Length: 121
Image 1 (cartoon, helix red, strand yellow):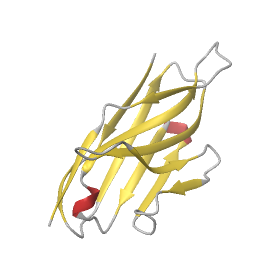
Image 2 (cartoon, one colour):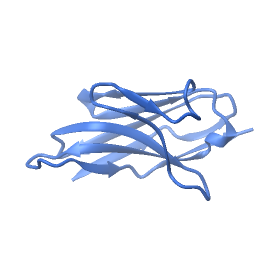
Image 3 (tube, rainbow, N blue to C red):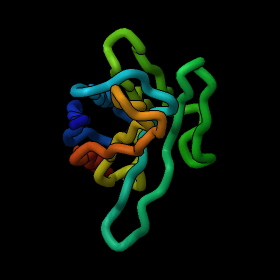
Image 4 (tube, rainbow, N blue to C red):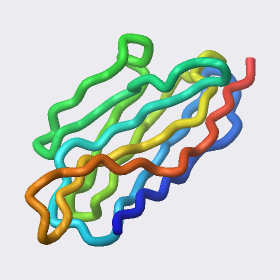
């Protein structure tokens, strides 16, 4: 089994910063892309940022210049540094990882349980 555990969410005022972490553990041979998605009440889940094993990144237009995704491959951990937060960033943030397990030739996508980020105006 593979588990993804997020941490770092919370309540912050507009203009503030938060750093989310997501650690993957379990039967992991390697991880391809890792990423962060978010879902606000009444809205669909959307991609926030993603990063490949080689460090290439991709961001939603709404967070470019404010959020930075990074990863520590040795720790199977992905981070999301969120600066200049806005009330519209309020959502549950989910991490995911495209994982190759031992004895498997096919990657499988795993999700964390989500962490709440609330930005007050």
